[in-house]
Image 1 (cartoon, rainbow, N blue to C red):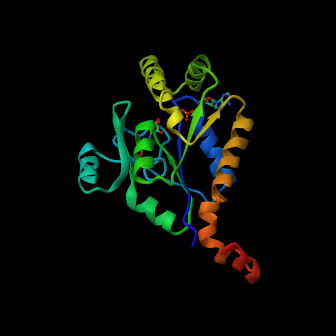
Image 2 (spheres, helix red, strand yellow):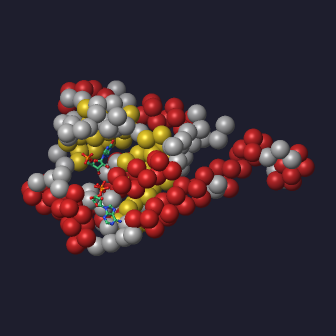
Image 3 (spheres, protein in one colour):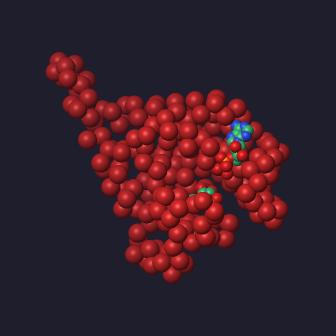
Length: 210
Ligand code: ADP
Ligand code: 5GP
């Protein structure tokens, strides 16, 4: 069976990552979204086990000790991590998995799992990023300032990603995101190991394997 794709998406807060990820999940329902663990408190409307696994700092530390996380990082003063077993199991079952994680986590994933596809979403400008963050209306002034500061640090890591998408017009950005996922699925390196499952024609199969 063809192994699933590990897709990692990061963006400075307010860029439109959640919007784009939701569109992608609707368009490709077979992609599994990896639910992270976090020590952050749930926001109104967030559901434990759906948005995140909301756990205590002690529980989080235990997971690190037991090597149960594929990656983890401190983001905006809280800890976040990706449960390793679930992700590896899904990939081995041929399911594509999407991680919505920060830059520190994404680079850890690439180091430990080089086949991962890293996509960075950029806002068209810092001014527009600020406008989007404010217009979302979910953060107070202090949090907005903090996020804008961290955005600058995150932007300096964007060129380490495999792909960059500028989220100017939403629909265009979404088309690019879909194209990347589709193209990555059909890379020769991935496909060639599975010719026998994909191709029925014996002669063609022989020719491809010579
Ligand atoms: P993130 O997950 O990156 O923090 P969100 O998806 O919550 O960002 O988007 C932040 C705000 O920007 C939301 O109000 C969203 O509707 C808006 N937004 C997202 N993409 C665009 C876009 N291309 N143009 C204008 N506004 C956008
Ligand atoms: P929020 O608290 O707004 O949901 O997320 C804050 C930031 O934490 C976002 O940039 C999000 O991508 C990142 N994040 C969420 N889950 C994880 C995770 O498991 N690992 C890492 N490294 N970052 C995460």
